[in-house]
Picture 1 (cartoon, rainbow, N blue to C red):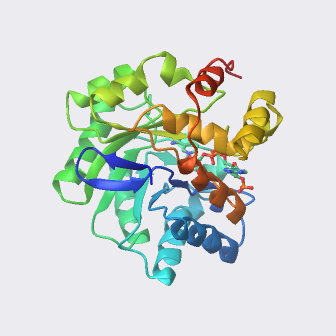
Picture 2 (cartoon, rainbow, N blue to C red):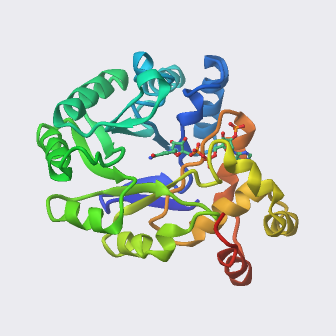
Picture 3 (cartoon, rainbow, N blue to C red):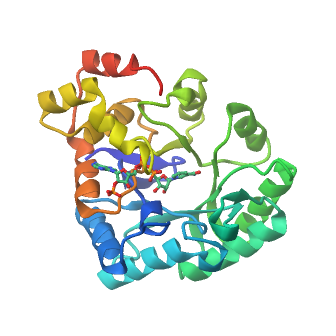
Length: 288
Ligand SMILES: NC(=O)c1ccc[n+]([C@@H]2O[C@H](COP(=O)([O-])OP(=O)(O)OC[C@H]3O[C@@H](n4cnc5c(N)ncnc54)[C@H](OP(=O)(O)O)[C@@H]3O)[C@@H](O)[C@H]2O)c1
């Protein structure tokens, strides 16, 4: 089984995590189906779930995804075996996605996430995005204080550049970086961020790894992915995930799923070994 380690601390995960966002945003499935997706993920050996306080429909619904995951894991009796990483730093007024990196909001968000996840300490707390209205170091200081208070174990960043990561590293250890990255968006390969994370032993978590919540259907129209899916008796989604896994032992993709079949298929990517020529051909696919 391909495994990934968080921050060289000995925490090991199956190399495909579950991005739980589709279970709680607009168009979400009912709770029974959502629980089945989480159960299928864990049954398939998955043990890293990515969530956020704002995976919900609006500000009134904050924490929906965290409560859902906790409920499902409790029902399955698996709370100790699955690592749940969450985030703070956004709001959802009227369903919009708005950054808010104010230290007071981050502290309140963390407290509410602790309650929603029914835990004393969050294993990985990620700053969801940098708020241009707030000095980055003030947002980061808030997370450092939460860590000092024992409320979070590791700090992660999301939606950051290499320069922002470097400035954060001058203040504290960063365990993970979560950015948009997939076969159609190779920005972080081109700009060196993924290599930089590897050199600093930072786990890189590609979000929207199969093209995005609504964009993933493009994979099934891409001729090269279809051709390779035929060759390896896989699906285009699995090929795209296997390509990411081949790019480094520090890469932990988190495909989203609202259907059991999707997450079952994605987990199979850990068993897929692509040839060097096929990886090179996938590298040459232009960004879209
Ligand atoms: N940090 C951030 O700012 C940020 C932003 C966006 C997302 N994220 C995180 O990243 C996770 C993944 O991103 P995403 O949900 O935007 O995009 P994604 O994982 O690229 O695509 C998700 C959609 O693709 C479909 N899918 C996934 N694997 C499949 C497979 N093997 N076969 C067929 N269909 C498959 C699913 O369809 P069904 O719904 O039909 O199962 C799902 O809704 C999110 O859930 C969230 O945890 C983070």
